[in-house]
Image 1 (cartoon, one colour):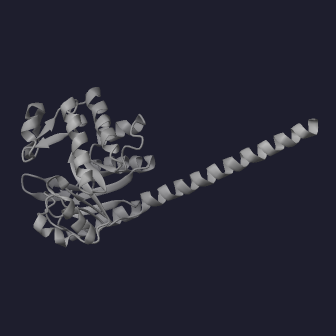
Image 2 (spheres, rainbow, N blue to C red):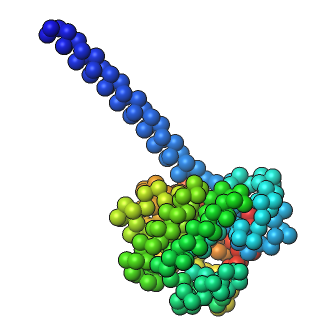
Length: 288
């Protein structure tokens, strides 16, 4: 009896160890794959201001960002046929622009003017009507054949530091997640930093895009400069924190200076970040 029980225990222990080994191997494989994905540099482009008639020039990108709100399935298919592997659509979750066909539906929810963008206003993201709108819009955009979302203006939390604003943004991102498509959050470092520290992001966000880490925009004179030392150091720490958390890193920089462009490329290559360098504030050119 003793020997029989000992044998059974031995078989049980061996079985448990075998299962643990398989789990560990699979985990290491997934972790290795995740690290590879994080460090893969993609040909990346943001073309929010490019006229539709010039879309034919957008070719062979790993990931592009466009505004699919006024596009249809055929437009997305055409971009795919031009060798663009992933197409993410802009979706504005924290403010609303006057040119949107639904602007008047939410005009009563608008807050202060959006600095430097005169046709745009911050919006009350805590309102149920706005949340429902974003959920429906994300479904509508997915139906057009996009591969993911580029969610803008979570910076509304920086301007209105209310717990309800923070929780509402998480709700909105959760609704976007329900589409089954990945999401890159543009800007929103205050919101993202809080979500990382509280571990509330979970798998809601695939990556972050940060503008003007190494460059600075002079909106009044339509000019570009290098960012200050303090700004750069702040964002370098922020980007590292995001990458360590497991987020894919994208940068959008603004300059027409070739020397600065080379410095940006070197910085991104060293840190395994993805970057698009635009020659216009409106992202209206197709800059290689």
